[in-house]
Image 1: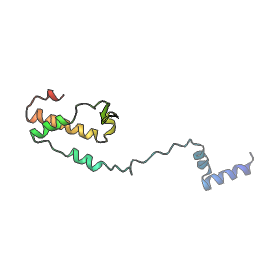
Image 2: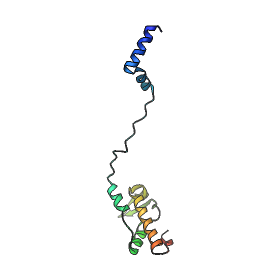
Image 3: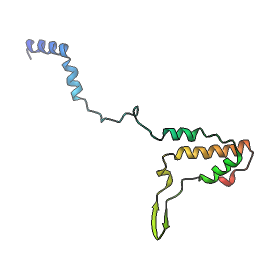
Image 4: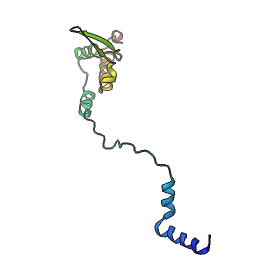
Length: 123
């Protein structure tokens, strides 16, 4: 490499940043990942509504504990009108599963802490 080539390289690299451009081109590219910033969750208002439900009535708490199962229901086959329908585990289908289970937990806590009831029947 002669002096004029070296001088030309220095001038070009300082003028347009060619060294940085070459280094950037040689770096492995990372795959594009979806931005969570603009993610639209259409169920968010319903999630917030369920999370804001206050359990302050004994009958309401008992109804919630009976209605919402303690565990994710297992898949089953349902026979209706001579046809068999396969139902997968409900927790995989329900996008509000965490909120509903949280509501059941609040009902159990209300019955145990505020009402002083034995909740072992619901566990």
